[in-house]
Image 1 (spheres, one colour):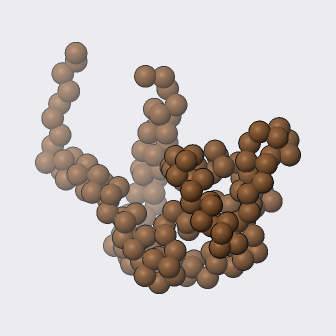
Image 2 (tube, helix red, strand yellow; image 1 turned 90 degrees about the horizontal axis):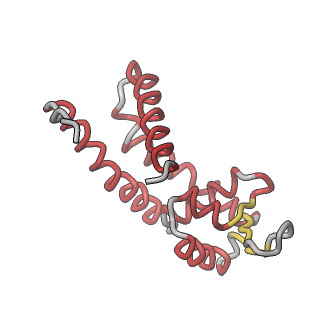
Length: 157
């Protein structure tokens, strides 16, 4: 096996900070949504993806993938959203096998009402801590890292 150089002190700080954020940032954003809107981060994210999809609907498997939830966890979440009339589920008309989640007007309304609170949390927890001069470079670097990780997941082990 090839030798890999240890991380420098700065590299270690960067990596550990990123790993801490992977855990703490979603939790903090979710806590804010629950406190202000009684909505979990998973609910918000599912509604957001549906709002951005063509006809405001997605296959449940695609929605699960987009939100990084298992299909079974997504199904349970959608059952809860359906019971509150924020989405409806139906069989796919194209193949009859898959299930589709469709955002309702009430669901879109609920998402729009939560958006300002979510945006305020994002600004308070992330955006307000980044110097304007660093924004573009940081956005490009993090996007490149995310793309690289996404591509690595697609490759067979």
